[in-house]
Image (cartoon, rainbow, N blue to C red; front, side, top):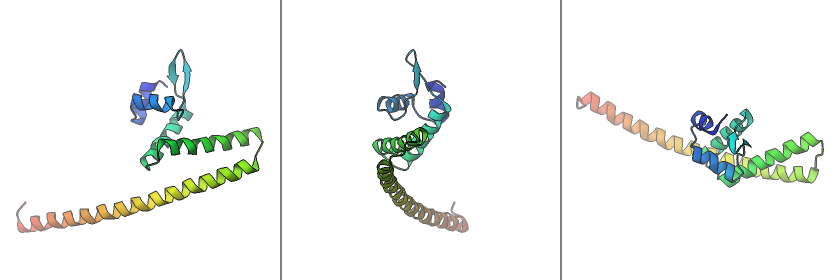
Length: 133
C-alpha cells in the first residue's frame, strides 16, 4: 500500500509517516524510492498510534518494538540467549508498570470529567425545570 493510502486509512499525516521512516520507527520496503507498506507495517503503525495515544514517547515506542523484534528473532533462529531474555523481561516489566500507571491516571481523569458532566447535567436540568432554557 502506498503512503497516501496508509495516511488516509490510519489518519496519520504523510509527513508523520516519513518521519517515522526517517527515525527507523516504521521502515516500509522501498522500490524506486517509493514506500510500500505491508499489512504487517500497518499493524505496527496501529500499535505505534495506540502507544502514542497512551503518552509514550517515540523513543519509548521504538524501544518496545525493538524488544519485540529481538524476541521474534531469537525465537525464529531457535537461539534463545537466556541473559538477553532476562534483560528483555525486566525491560518489559518496566514498560508494563508504566502502562499501569498511565491507566490509573486515565481513570482519575475520567472520574473528574464524569463529575463535571454530572454538575453540568444538574445545571441544565435545573434550567429546564425553571423554564429558563
